[in-house]
Length: 419
Image (cartoon, rainbow, N blue to C red; front, side, top):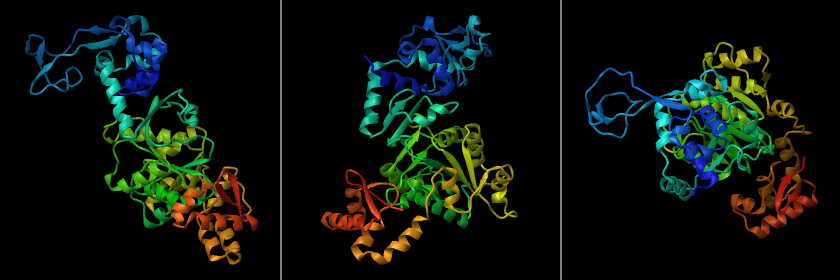
């Protein structure tokens, strides 16, 4: 007997099954368990005769190259013929079955035949052994912000953790082939946002994405999340393996695609709706006229999110897309305060100015500890780990900083600076 989560895992692992088709199937059958247990006579499709050109057929085996109609695992030219399906006539005029009408025969074949409970349980156990987690629409762990978007993913695979939705978050996107100044701007703004307790969301790609993740990680206690366009067990690009591991430690890496899914081009525009969906706003740094990051910005606009854009040289084609968005009404960004104000986070002064102002009144030990604190509460043990200081020294320094009114304990052994 499978659990509800294992039924959802089974459905999510059906290769080629899209999100909207999955939800259409659930609506048709009532729930995933009923879908799993449905008899072939219960499905909304009916088998039809193949209209392929006549070929050689021997004992049910056809020599063919039709990838949608044959078993991909068969070797050589001889392959097992699969049936083709069409939506039953009684559902053809109902728009609610639109996505079921478009379902490929190969997907229907997998839905009908991929039903080994032992295999499903084994595959799910493999997830847990690899420290990969799984959640699905309606479950408690499913990110709250995704419920508000059109085309919310049915399920997510993730390593690390998922955003809880109780903190402000900003998606940072831009060109893969950005110039040096673009990298530095993305990194700097992401660090400053993380210093103010904002979670940074991006896509782990080369260029602006990577710089954004690194900037958030440079902030003591900064949290960042990556949404991939491939299986979460794959680090893409491979050159980002160290960054991939660091993000998992401080935040999480997630994907709607089953394990082993390769990073094909069509997956990336789809994952952009999740990047923007998890965020309260989108920050665009350096985007050309046809940059893929503009897809994320447009999706965010459809989702009702604010768009912040760093302006660039009007003669530089790498900024043409960015500058066009500003002309169309996007929020222009020249400093982190522009973003903070837009998110409703109002501070008296910049954290860096605060650090400079209080530094003369602190001892060397207090300065060492203070450097690892920001507006995002950080636990005592993490301060000790990052600073390399003995816990007794850290506790003493925190007590002195509290007495001076520059630090406060905001929870059990969690500390943050006071502005």
